Image (cartoon, rainbow over all chains, first blue to last red; front, side, top):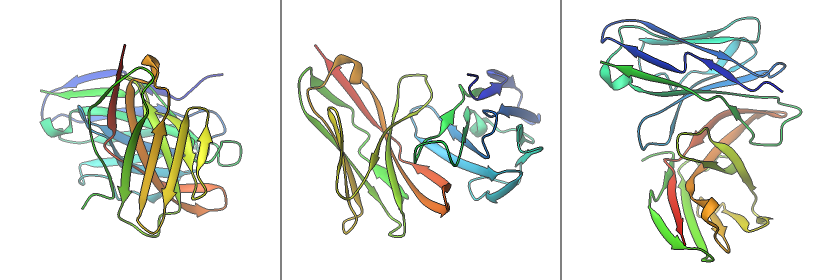
Length: 116
Length: 114
């Protein structure tokens, strides 16, 4: 079946511009997570959603970062006034709270963001 | 102190070797623990869950020591295909079957050579 889909797969933007990253989770998955991974680093938690609400957004690095989820499905991560340190791979993951084995997250292929 | 800490390696071992990775976590209230595997430029995938009683899945054995806040992964009879980054994951149960934040360690790089 279809997995988690992220778009765009690559994004190059100039410092100071705003970007929007999109995540389409697997159909029926209530939980949705955003992480970012810099070169050679582990995954840094950003935010997670249960349905349309975000119980934990503690990982958002600054107020330039925001995320929303509508209709319990698609999520958008927005970065305003991008900085070079925002360059990373942004990964989205989803899970089905009832059907998935404990600890399972289904990751998308990520969006590679480069800020020049 | 980081919430989850791992030795980044790299570990370079010959085929057939046994290799062990360690991970420590700082929050004693953490409830669930996992090991993920990430191949180069690929997305992470769940490898094994970690229980106090130990969890053996083929060549992989995961162990939890709550008193020491320590998690381990043992790989026996290493294969070339085991070459990857291994990520330690710690989380809280948010209630029922849902999970809150899953916190990943920085990963340990393993290279298995012929």
